[in-house]
Image 1 (cartoon, helix red, strand yellow):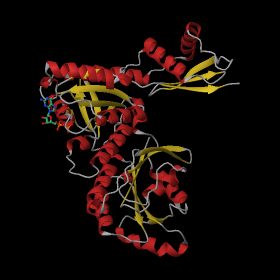
Image 2: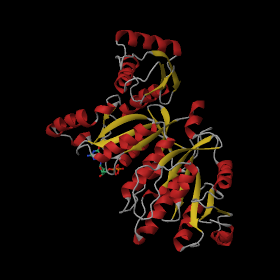
Image 3: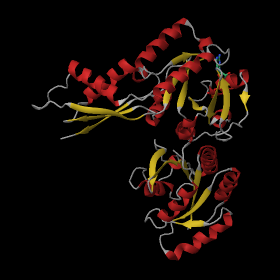
Image 4: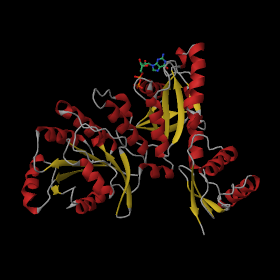
Length: 432
Ligand code: GDP
């Protein structure tokens, strides 16, 4: 989906605007600065068009950190959004920080819209007009709190939003899009450099591919791949406060553009909460997943035994993800990444014909019928694969199916069809 990113100083009303656009109370509005939220990307829809809304305001620094934080927001937005919405408080006017952001945004080869927020009634409109001085074109007066002007602004924004997502473009046969993810120092940039260095780096001039400067095309295993947001990997962002927030912002936004994620783990260190959080973001995004265990050259026997135990305990929910043991430093087994990526993408693309899927369901329910609940026994009437990327199934049943039973269906699907490297989704609908 195309990405709209909302950027602006703390307290200008970014969260309120996110709520307005989503039409629900999902992003929490807080009066106190410094609030950290977990979610940064939301699925949004306007006039029947779907897009991803990225809220860069999840971490609001104290006064001293404002410039760095806002610059980091702008940087992420510039690199990863299709359209940027810059929010200014029309009651305060343009501050030095706002002008600094404008400079950063100017460098972006992206449409930028200027929202003059907190114009709650018409008498405040002169405050909005004053923002012409920022040189970003027309300031759109809005009141995120009351909704005033927001619909008109969204209509205009949608005109500049690309129709087809980058992922959808792949269906005509362009290179497949890979995100390299992982916490700092696990070896992401070493991996990227090794891959790009040993193989020919393909100039970004292939027909039908995006020319995003933050993406790089690299030939691996005789095939060209697009590595998304390589700027985020190569760049060293020096941010102390809020660094985690900006890292997850980048991760989410990069996943949005990718089809498959390589999550890099450092085998010399215990699997951490941060590693697991990154894997969760991949699962939430529905992208295919490959796990790369890096720094294998530093692994001794004792650590290796611990690692095996950690994998069993912490990664039990992603046993389906292909694992490759590599060393970005020595180049060991880097070539194994390619078959792992191909396997994961094949699974992600898989479509099971309805006839076959129902034969599978018939066999499954005959062997293991749903348990009786309150004197009734829900029956699966029919099923179909509603989507691929990732494979998404819908079961029509006569009553609510136990979560345990749905997990059983998922398990059987994996046993029969594999789906290595891809999440699968099983939904249900009750038919009377
Ligand atoms: P990033 O922050 O994830 O991009 O990590 P870097 O690629 O910058 O790597 C962090 C540090 O780990 C650097 O000092 C690398 O030289 C080192 N490193 C990366 N991969 C390996 C590896 O496979 N083996 C060893 N021994 N060191 C590695």
